[in-house]
Length: 341
Image 1 (cartoon, rainbow, N blue to C red):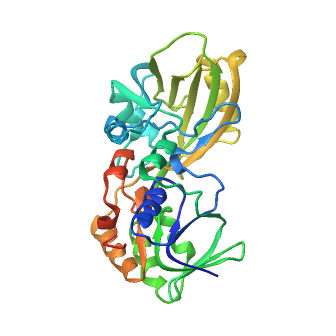
Image 2: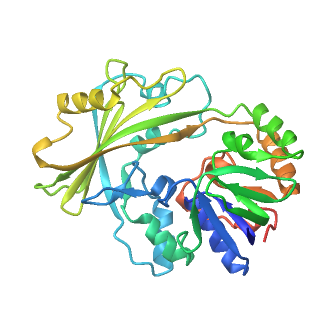
Image 3: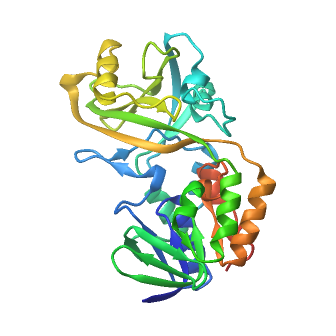
């Protein structure tokens, strides 16, 4: 058994912010996630060239924070160029043809921006800013259960983590799957009543050698059901270009069998990828790309009950509240988590 002050469930930006705050308050901590890779939505992938697994852009205000704290970075800002492959209701298509109310449609916001900023190393810069690393005390393991009565996390590798406080940053809708004990029933009931819903994205990404010098990000938009891709994004960085081919899916608009081949065929058809210059490609999924609006009063009730059980819900998915890098960096976590520390 490992006995600590703070157990953090997750390995993304919210988890990093949590352990940074724990260090500030001299609390012992450990981070737990089912993946060996850290970074969450800003995780890097790639064998020959590391880049972000999902298209994600960095607000200028977040760059300002890094520079105010003398963090050296290679974040570059680009003008944007939008190309229409096919006119159509792109908002509906990016949302996976859901009828739910989405908190923020990132694709729509990006298309409206004249300038966007990108870096494949943004998580590293945030680690430097927060003076913390998830790899310092990190366990890669599935969770068997979180026992609310005894304040323990039982892991599939046999370890038992006994905590004084637990910070939960995983998706809120799967919390009932893990909690256990008499205290869990009320939490399960409220989570169910929140009617959490979301749209996911599937991405083919291509890294190509860039022979032409470009200083702009290209968007390609297809708005009808005639094509599964709705957005392609081409970003020049170093001597390469990163091309993301994106489709949305949901319970009402599931992924087609052989979706990778379908997207590849469409990308070739529209001239979005240059196969002879491609050095690597990958496929990834972001399950909770767009999340639904919820009754915040019900969530506040859930958060209050969870805090009575020594659990703090935190982060974009733990709180089911859209956020971005800037908001996470600026947020005072000790206040947000009701003086948890």
